[in-house]
Image (cartoon, rainbow, N blue to C red):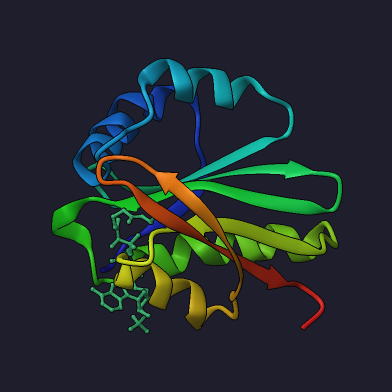
Length: 149
Ligand SMILES: CC(C)(COP(=O)(O)OP(=O)(O)OC[C@H]1O[C@@H](n2cnc3c(N)ncnc32)[C@H](O)[C@@H]1OP(=O)(O)O)[C@@H](O)C(=O)NCCC(=O)NCCS
């Protein structure tokens, strides 16, 4: 997709991000959840925009030497066009710049697109969180990217 720009998310983006979140997840974060998260000094969220609108976002919490990816989603009609690649590359770039050690996340075993995305960038499966997800109940695969590799 042409004209995709990735930039740090601001509170002005929340309405569109909530729209994408609600389309993508069965237990979506609320507007208040995003507002609170953006106020934390350890949070760093990015949005991807085209000429018209926000098409995707990625949320992270940076604590000590690690980054936790809290959520990532792309508008249904904008998928498979490289938007998530660009969002993840923004987080990888930031992690490199800040010399962070690990990037961590959880993913549903059934979420093949997301697992393929993370594998592409060198994330490895390091454990399972039993019944981590609801609606439907499913384990969470813990994936980690070792930034020294
Ligand atoms: C997962 C998600 C963010 C991917 O976004 P996207 O913009 O479509 O992804 P991209 O086009 O940038 O693709 C990046 C890589 O992801 C993988 N991928 C994405 N969609 C895929 C699919 N349907 N099947 C297989 N692999 C897929 C591929 O490895 C792809 O690399 P490639 O382009 O070199 O083949 C998107 O499907 C989404 O929003 N899903 C719903 C929300 C979600 O599940 N978030 C993850 C929670 S852990």
